[in-house]
Image 1 (cartoon, one colour):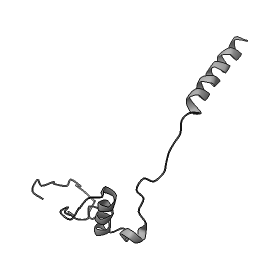
Image 2 (image 1 turned 180 degrees about the horizontal axis):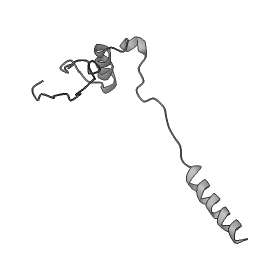
Image 3 (image 1 turned 90 degrees about the vertical axis):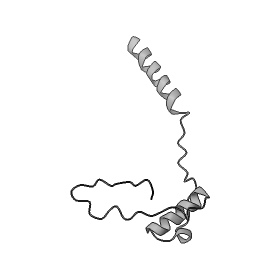
Image 4 (image 1 turned 135 degrees about the vertical axis):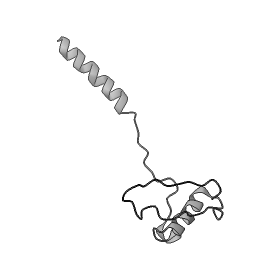
Length: 81
């Protein structure tokens, strides 16, 4: 009887925490592929501008970081770029 009481208490606590939990997994600011183009750096920059609703024309694309990933992959960040 004692174990049944603990089992019911654990079940009630589990239900109290699980049932009110909601996962809102909606895409916030999803953009159609036709609006942004393919998955290229200029298209990604355009998409970023659409999502942020800001002018990103002064942003600089530094290059493709996927190239040459063997060995040392440290990237230097310059303050004036």
